[in-house]
Structures are given as structure tokens and as C-alpha cells.
Length: 98
Image (tube, rainbow, N blue to C red):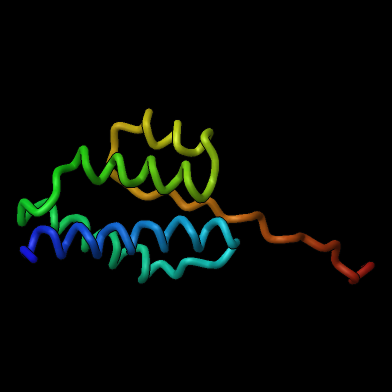
């Protein structure tokens, strides 16, 4: 298997994990996000993958794991960045009455 094919296979797994974790409501640590973005950048610079291919993987992952609305957001965004879709943390009123 070629280096480019190995890279693309790993990229698919990493992007699917990114969207799957969001679907499950898991926190994605910033370091994990930065590693994925760096991995993508390295693949682009090495010529293993095209920007349009990465963009399509974002759209496919968003559609498969999240929603068509979020996939459309990726389609319309001209930038090549991963968007975090985290559930809002619950906010509870303070028990301090003073």
C-alpha cells in the first residue's frame, strides 16, 4: 500500500472519530483537535490529499454522524476547519441567596 493510501485511510478513521465523538456528546480535548488539524495540514503539504477531498470528508462525516444542516454548513464554509458542535453545559442557579 502506498504512503498516500495509508494517509487517506488514517485520515478517514480520524475524521470519523471526530464526528462520532461529537455525536455521542463526548468532549474533544483541544490537543486532539490540534493534532487532527496538523495531520490534515501535513497531508496537504505532502500532496497525499487535496483540499477538496478533505472538505468532502468533513461534509460526509457531518452528514453521517450529525445532521444535514451541519453538513450544509461545511459545504458553504470556504475555510478548511473543523467546527466543534458541543452540547451546552447545564447551568444551575446559585444556591447562595445573599
